[in-house]
Length: 167
Image (tube, rainbow, N blue to C red; front, side, top):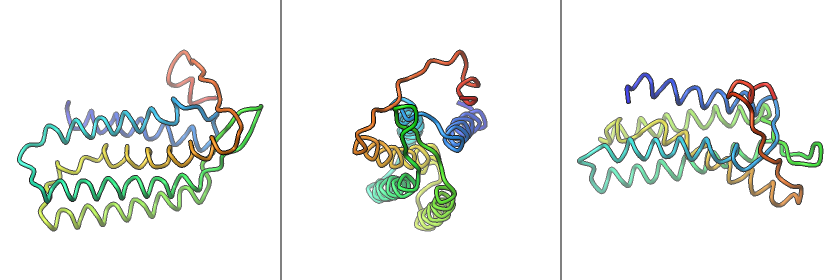
């Protein structure tokens, strides 16, 4: 897949998720877990295409993965999870964006450090980092939702992806 096309697709997924969650949206399992699974899968696929990685490279990748999930979990702790119309909803807050900005800075520093120690840039797929961050967020938000005792929202089928943004 062309790098620009792939970057555009990743950006579209991230923007769509952020817009929906900023406005507030019903919390259902598919919307919570599909973006991180898709992005993480793309990242693993990109990483699998990279040959010649050694044990140290995989150590950096594992550390970056753990850091990404942890930073996503921190972001997830700032998301407002609440009941509306008898089901769970979620909404990003100002603190969510503050934690996201700090996370980006930490991940940029980690990437620079990894590059300094010789890990190739194509062994650090952006979609893997983003996907794992969203996964950490989803695990925390999903856990908070389960602990609340309020049911998750049922899945709604929209006629197009743009219709979903206007909910």
